[in-house]
Length: 179
Image (cartoon, rainbow, N blue to C red; front, side):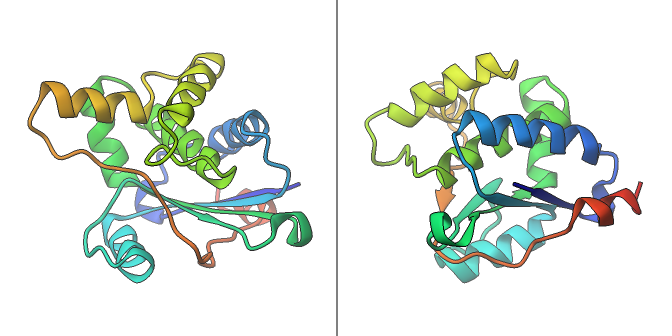
């Protein structure tokens, strides 16, 4: 099954092929079988999606949109990531923007697989932590959010799953022409 990736032209420093290779590993680790589309875009775009699908008029770092009947459609869902928030978080936590995007991809994949850290009493956090170590990533998003809440008075960025799937597809062939 295919993973499609679209990176906003302002963030081309992120290496599409590296992110695609990671996304395939993360999809497999999350036990997803269908296609997944990933959009890496601006705060403006994430704000619009967050407003349209969740009624929250603010940008967020990652949104997940599970596919309708993935076993029938073959499409597991879509993930949208704010490159600007990822870059800021990478600086804040002392790792590369690419690693931050990978953390967000993994988090989004787990949401597409049906996990919900807001309702599962830590099950998703434990799985994300295990997979993060397996995939050689820095601290998980849920762990950081919890740490921020207990150690610093900074606004936490919760990850959400939204119902409908926006059109964010771009094929690998199209990516090859944008190198």
